[in-house]
Image (cartoon, rainbow, N blue to C red; front, side, top):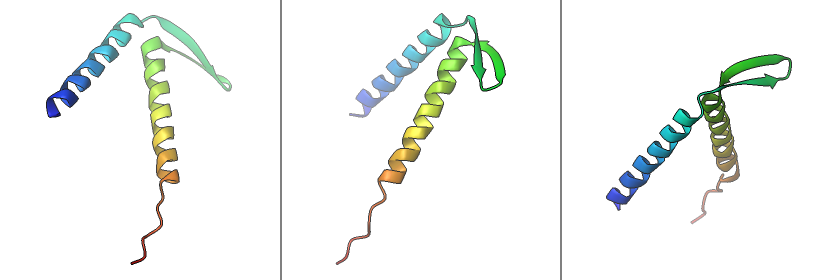
Length: 70
């Protein structure tokens, strides 16, 4: 089972590296009144991180368990 997790992590890292190296062109992103120019890979990474943090916060907020009475 540990080897399977290791192989899955390595495959995920390989996929991330492929995405980063294939998306190096600059894109302009506008947020409210500010305009940023950054590589597309950076934009994808930031978007993923914001989504992951939002998902974690939501899962923690929804998983509050009431203590068991014995």
